[in-house]
Image 1 (cartoon, rainbow, N blue to C red):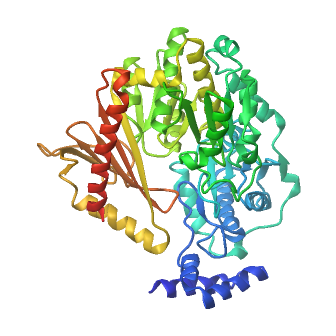
Image 2: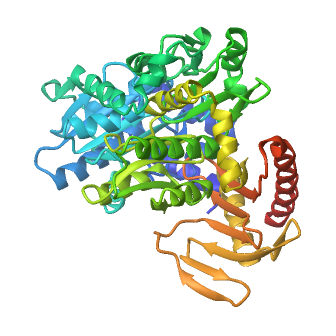
Image 3: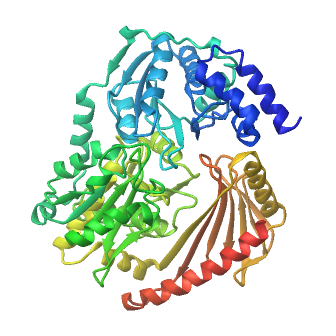
Length: 577
């Protein structure tokens, strides 16, 4: 069956729904006037995956709208009611267009199914939702967000009672129930007002108190409380929480990028609300230059990722990448805990398989284990849950600007992380150094790591097919060398196998299956490839290392590593195509 025929069949099914008139008219218009858009909107169902839903807002079975959200929520409600007699769900939303509307629909459906709902009455960050699930003893949680995706997207992330995003067996069970809801008329939609209440204020108050208790350098923070900090929420939910965390710590010289402090799902001042991109941080960097600030912080719409800007040894503002920031955070927490005599004997840190191996080296220098998980912070959250009570999580993160300290939140937390980086900056300044010099010291001790992420966006049904083809090509005809260096090992997480090419010795990878390929070169460089789980992208991660003999030659070493990354990137992309 052709893609058009599939779309027509799905659209006919939708026409049997009790649709609002605008939706019905738009389906007719698309079919008559815009075949490509019609196919993209209806060729299948928007997949409810292990992270929930994410897609472009609009009409159709492949879009985020009241019907796809309502049917997904009915499936979640069915699973909750099969799992417990007294289910409850906390719901949050960020600044995305229609976010509060989708949150309200979820509350309608859940309460109509006899499930108690705690609904934030205004936008709030994703990590606060994670905390609320645990604090309120909820069965599940929902946050309406598309994270850092462009403005046309929205999403629906599901959490379980540990405060982390859903993992086995709940993910498969929920997915099965969602797929079982085949028709809009199966959805219970009449809200039971007696089961819907606002999240109580004590939840946020306790969160702020616990964040403040993480402070390991309170005297240093007091000493340099006038440290110049610039913060931008990039029109997202961070404006409701990050300034509060910084104030609770005692930082008194925080400047906000006012133009970006107004929540707005159109993100009018940026092309994309992603703090990983320099363009999204430009207004904050400009304000920091004007104010002579030492630290720049920028969070994405749902406040689980934070971008960091610091001054280098030439007093220039530079943006740290996620690997650099994560490494500094782990180092600082271990160092200060050891200095204060509070580092537990059973401490550990965690990172994902595509995050810098610098973190492993730092952990080893403190004789602390570093555990690796699959890509996605939910796996770190799952690890924390498994080790709770037997080992103590200190800090961890992933290269995509997501970090966590402590165990009371079970997702990456940009509000918590923002104040942590401010604390590190204060500690450094009070001790006559800087974050930048701390990073160079790490490079001198453990080697200079240079990383880069290349994401290729391939939208629609054709894009999905292209991504599958690229992964299959690299899997069936892997490179023998990259950048003039022989490939020493290949790790294929889909078949859970690592192969040392020199002697073809194999070992089993003790992690769940995942569509990830890694090529480890003879010089220790690591290149990873994976399709994104939340966006129509294929991602290439490049991580190279060289010795750094002195801070003065950092720029030269970094330039050489960048050139090498460029050569490998061109070679690998050509091979994948």
